[in-house]
Length: 530
Image (tube, rainbow, N blue to C red; front, side, top):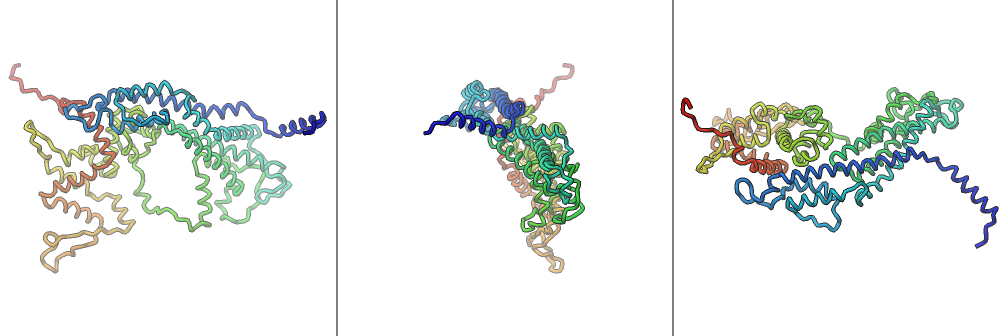
């Protein structure tokens, strides 16, 4: 290798210094802010884990089946102590990433599980395990995009929002001499910064929602990083294509652009850029709708039934007001169906609400979700609030001191069958929109008159009201069969995994309360004057 002369060394150093001069200057304040955000998220995630693990530990110590291998009735449990699946799922959610890969998922008793929880709490520290380290490494892309986004935002705020057009190239047909050099690049930077602000706020909201349900993972961070990048890129593309958004309202797509003042950003883009970034994928959907006429071969949604397929709000549940509705939204519960399928123990752990309150809400939601909001509200006025109230009303058996089983009164089967088979406005709208005429199938003995001139056909297409009336008459016409038919209906309504899970928790806690909780004591009559 030849020796390098001092002159050559000096030239090399000058070239390196010249090259470094083109590198952007790093603002360490912005860099620290970009690094601090994922660090704060990981710290909050560990703090939430520790707090909820302590609540789980206390719950395990007080939950009925984790204390005793036998129920309060003296019967042997069908499973070993501490083996309620609902509780195990919640515990595993907060311990899974703390366990070593070699650990085997063994079903532990209550005391062993509490010891493991305490051990995992002591070993869980900020960036103190491989899970947190992997989570921080997955956020490096988010750190980079946040650095450039905040840098562009500060630059936009410092230069102001009133900028000009392209480097000598006209915008929207404007003459080239009216556009100062570098102005269009400044416009793009400002639009990018505004879109980044909206996308960043949306990402932070998603991170907070993920923290509330302990769902912050590497996937969540990478997904939000990609969403920010995609939102900014598509908003910039839309700005270049539609510099004057009012053209979309006055002229169809593809017309020649008219003369536009390229020395300013249109005021509508100062609103559209952050809004399109704020709603994830909204910019993509906006672009798709505008180009829909060019891609007519894409299948579109069948929107005929939108009016009858709306979600049922949580406000219909007793005890859930407007603030509580938004608090449940932090747990990922946005409508009645979400609440009906939620784990009551998990809801108690991840929210400030008690276990009995969570059970009552979910039992109400299951009745509303299965029957629909109309029939649910009607049944509430008839003293049926939960899925178990309806189960007891239709299929309730009692036993006297001689252990003789007695069925509930048959009259209630007819009373509530009339509501269960009632035709609602929603079913009328569905039948009218879809053009459905249900078939009524009659038998020869009871439904067709003996006179051939007045006899009705054995199969007849009828309106939905007539069909519901016929269905209710079919199961109640024979008193000997009414009870079996109605209880069969209740059987498949209640045979749902979510209902069965809730029923098990209900039964275990009911057993723990003991026989004295079934009714108030009725002391014998006292003699007069006592």
